[in-house]
Length: 198
Image: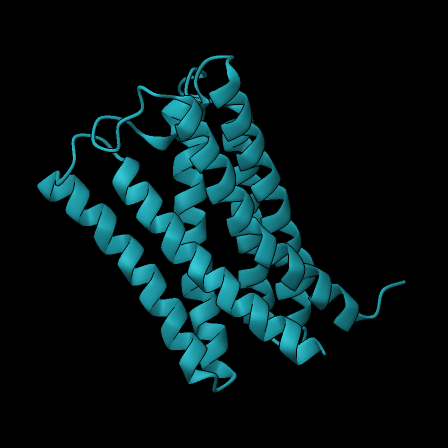
């Protein structure tokens, strides 16, 4: 049986790997799909069809979701072992990871399931961030509470501005910026978990 600190380290390593898989597979799929446009497409268009770009993108989303699940279920859950709010946020984060895996299963051609799981992923992730913000604030970890809140706030503003101002014809830009912001948070928190576990 793993000691909780060992599980926390495993979760941290999975957190470090999640952005690598997300951006690595997304970049590879874009390189394989010459018609992709940052302004005219959504990232999910990379997963449509049955060719190499779709296989790379969809498998990448599934693997990233799986890694993110262990980041939450093993890492966050043990990090917040003495916090009910923190563990609730960890469970919600793990649920968001399941929806990310589902994005890789229900690609853009499977409508409306793809839209449902994509919306559930972003909404659930935002809820997890807000809950974790509260948990971190209660632990008097003001620095990471602020980082978590700012990360979620940036994501919300990106989508509000997109739907109100339409700064791009399609959603690839807000999607990739949201992923970047979330990835920065995961890397920072993974470092924190690994350091405290050691």
